[in-house]
Every structure is written in structure tokens, then in C-alpha cells.
Length: 272
Image (tube, rainbow, N blue to C red; front, side, top):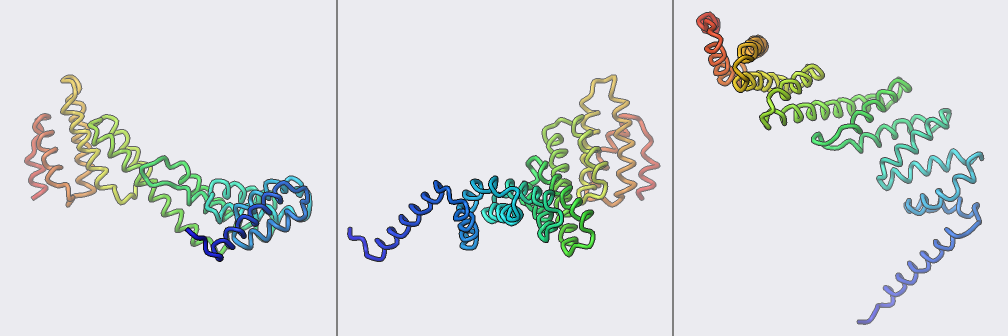
């Protein structure tokens, strides 16, 4: 198989470029390395900029150029989507150079890096909470920023993810038949996120979990737990009298009332 001249030329250029870069890494000419940081960054060769910066940043720490070099370091990590490191570098920049023209953007981008690390609702939401906190701090620090509305929108999106996480966690206990744990988890979810779009379903699941917990209780605890179920039933129908779960709610009430020997005629009259 013959290699075309143009292909050979490209391979030769790549080899030469790599060879020159390896020599640059070993060089003690820090001024040349510094210039190449800017060149590589402008050419979109962010990984090379980062490698050189790791060598020269300590040397330029106390110089006038430290601010710009640290800014490029954060930007380069962001461009390669290394959001964990970029977030740290942006935050360090904002803290170290609060008077910089880039301080506001650095603070915002630090929060944005946390946002990009926020996982899907099924997973641990530590990064989601960190992102919310970072955006809130940014808005407090820069109340007149043009990025405020963007931050508010992202905070709402992240909070909704926490709501869904809470819902999924509570629902998991219920699906596993861990009804005591389910009632606690569901109650906590409703307390923490009272305005969630899952409120009706969460309240129904809590009612059903209380009922099933009562059904499966030891005889000496059933009366107490059925009574708790009945109290929860009244809370539910007061808030959702026309619920999509009405049939199941009615079934739970009838069974609970029968066990407790409650007169259901008053309830039936009210419903009619």
C-alpha cells in the first residue's frame, strides 16, 4: 500500500509538531512557555495550554501576569469540559482577584460548573445543592448582574430536581413494601417541598402506606395505626376532594372505618 505524498506530509508535520512540543515541555525558557500558553489557547489547543500552565504558574504567582494566566487556566479547563477543576479554578480566581474585570464572570462560571456536574435525579444530589448555593451566593454578591435571571431559572430547575429526587426516594420505600419507612420519607418530602407537583400523589402514597402498615401490624397496635390512617384520610380529602385516586381512597376509608367501627353514613351523606 503506497502512502500518498500529501498523507506523508501531514504525518511528518504532526510528528514535527509533537517533537517540538515535547522539547518545549522540557525547556527552561519560561518566557517562551508563557507565550505558547497564549498561542495554544488561541488555537484551541487547551490541553497543551493546561500542561504548560501547570509548569509556569508557580513561577509567575507574584507577578502582574498571574491574574491573566490564572484566568486562562480556568477557561482552558472549562473549554475541555473538566467542570470539576474549572469550577475550583474559577472560584479561586474570584476569591484571589475580587477587583478583576473577570471576577463576576468567574463567580458565575464557578456556579455554572457545579450546575453542569448536577446528575440525574436518581443519583446523589450533593452537586445539585452546591450549585444552588453557588448561584444564590452569586446573586447576593452581584444583585444588579445581567446574569441574575439566568441564575434564578437555573436555581428553579435544580430545585425541581431535588423535588424529584425526594419523590423517587419516598416512592422507593413504598414500592419495596417498607411502609413504616415510606410514611416517614413521604412526610419528610411533603414537609420539605410542600408545593411540589407530586403533592397529590405523595399524600395518597402516604395514606396508602399508613393503611398497609396498619393492616400488617401486630394486633395490639392496629387500632392506633388505623386511627392514624383515618386522620390522614380526612386530611387528604379536605385538600383533594376530587382526587384522581378517589376510588382507592374510598376503599381505604371503608376498610379503615369498618375496622374502627366508624359510622360511615355521615361521610356518605357529605360525599353526596
